[in-house]
Length: 107
Length: 123
Image 1 (tube, rainbow over the protein chains, first blue to last red):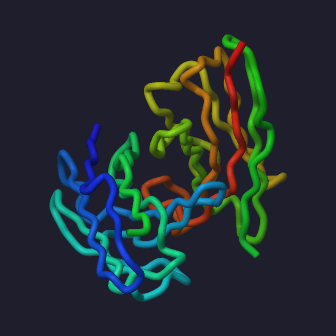
Image 2: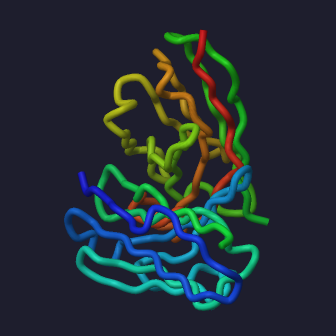
């Protein structure tokens, strides 16, 4: 199985801050790396697929990059609605695996 | 509008069974692989099971293999998760999710998610 790790596990930030979350895989998922946003009581949302492609309807302040086993999600200017937990996930090989999540809360 | 809606969650005793359903609308259901993903209380997301668009292939996490069965009825645009021999560790919110791209195979991001249905396994 491909193991996914994320750092940090949590961070505190203010509106307008630039936020970067990293995701590492135990082996390369090639570009089959996706990012999701999860809020309590809400359906998860796909933000980024294939490492760097913005999903339909997702604001352009979200961006993804990386290759091999190292990937990043960046929020260029944090907005009030962005306080949430973020997960990376590989869809290269079964079983599909998620990172442990990064919680972004208010500083 | 593209949407998927889960139902069937509830409280069940250890060793019991439950069947979850996920009703889909707004897209060509048979063109998409579908998955179940769960989140235990205070934990992260865990992929549980997937089924190809034509229902011909199914896949399971080791934690549920032999106990859970995924299936679909394309004529009803609905897919299911039959859960048997339930354990306390299966307590979670269960989400159904549709693949993003529509290739019929599951090797894709999860582009559409439901709101989830809670399954509690407790005596």
